[in-house]
Length: 287
Image (cartoon, rainbow, N blue to C red; front, side):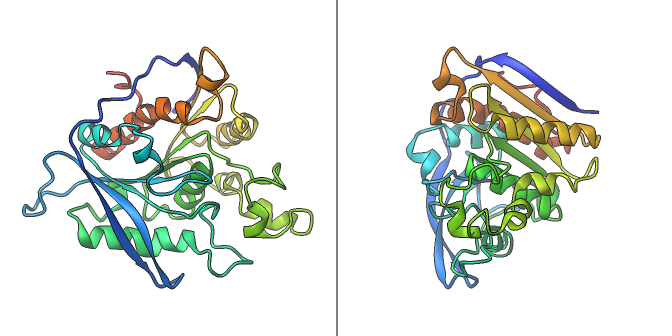
């Protein structure tokens, strides 16, 4: 079973951010009655005038961010699009949507947006493979929660999930990052908080249903929930790849954008292998 728990030094470096075409688009959202922005990165060689089709990696940002979070921070996404020959779509989930369809806020329908609006829109506007085996979803922090929950709940759309320092369990953070704004107070709705946590969806998975890679730093605030999800998957014999990265200090292995920048190529190596061969792997990571 492909289940790993690795403790390694931060030896990976981001690939050069060369090539790739970055554009901003506006995606109609009937569920929320507005247009939602996104950033699309096309790899070098993409030509809409040919019959060639491309795999897609959807990226969900963390709390306080936007679809431009990892572009503005210059994390090398164009270079990753070129290296792994994929279209990258950076979705927008508002500041603190938690990528949920909120049971208390009808204006927050970001799971529906990604699944029923964004993915079909991308497939209709770009030369992409409209099949799950050529789609992956990933994210960091709040986006890691969203990628897990959406990916696990919609295995018909996504064949692989990647997360970086994902907030996979919401229940330990009753006052954090406006989660209560989306779900109501935790003490009043404990079962709702549990049901909307990504770890609860992980508990339903069967082996082989979806490829999973999880990368987290050894000083991260979400380390314990990630270890618990790793153990849950291992106990249920669900194959997955779990990596803990230890840096030289807390910034290098904590909940920081610098760690996200380091982990992105690791996650893309796994997802790129899946999109190319149907099986995720870190065998080529760091090359």
